[in-house]
Length: 272
Image (tube, rainbow, N blue to C red; front, side, top):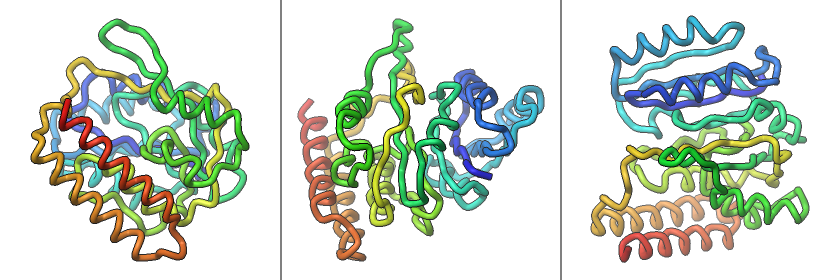
């Protein structure tokens, strides 16, 4: 098994079917990847609906449905990592989808087990049914003009998300998502595994991760300023703790950049 695709979902709507359909038609041989869907914080009727969809549509695919009563994306991803059989991990959010050659091209770009491969990204605006560049698209295009063996520091903006990439299982090791955080947990996870990332490579631009901008998604602007500040301080403490756990292996400039990013984003959102 080469790739384990991990999809956490909570009370999914029809957009999950588009996500799954994009995986069922991948050009990579179906024997080389598995799909782990983790239904978290809810059960029926969602579990039966998902299983029925898998039974009717996932012909030839290794699709597994797991369920946990404990809600949370981090917990769901951790359960999937523990059950994954692939040599590489690929995270996808349940309302997003991928291009047909996505898995094949990401696997092709990987040359060793300490290399993280980053895909191209496009946003789909649900409100007007249009596609536009994501901030990660801009970073991808900029870095594509440079060497394709990027350091963790050079690829720091790409490492703010665990999605849109192929991560070797050996790089993840025993690291898991911190369940104490609901904001910033992605970047925190990538920072913790960064000590084992030799370099970051970009896939061919045809490997596209489509991010859905949902009209009904919960806006983080509704989060109180007090919560944002408290979360930012907790994140900074956690970044420092991670770095000090192995200062000879982690990149100090990378962690300083992470701390500055937390502060900058928190101030911007608090004042907006």
